[in-house]
Image (cartoon, rainbow, N blue to C red; front, side):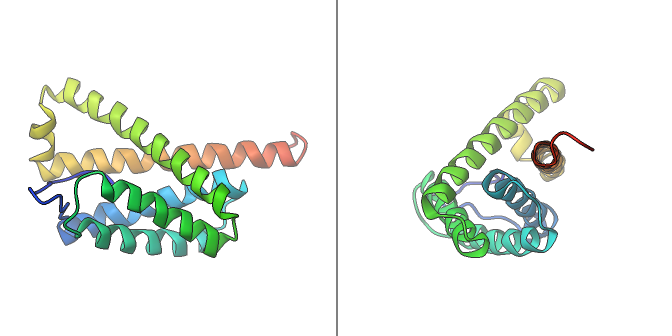
Length: 165
């Protein structure tokens, strides 16, 4: 999930409003992308179940007083477990998919953050101090990740049907 305020102990506290308005939708988008990459299909019910489970786990992980970076490793592991047990993906494949998803998220968020820093003429800290900007950037991220999932889903479906639409 998108980074907000980090305190000195590594705890990434997220206001409940930000979690509900951005964290949950972002987790669902991440789950959709993970499902497409893992099994080349989208099942709305499974995406929602996986997304809500992932969101709850990420929220709890972010409350842990561990060094920054450990949260990301834990999130990768949790997503892998969810893919394994909710979608019956082999764990080795689930782990690779989770790493791919985190790479995509990092890339998308990095590009969007650079864009917002340039357009808004603000620093990294300036953006993350403004909860409205965090929300706008978060929702832009959600839209981009969802579009990637939707495009990949369409591509895989087209390939499986022999190119017919």
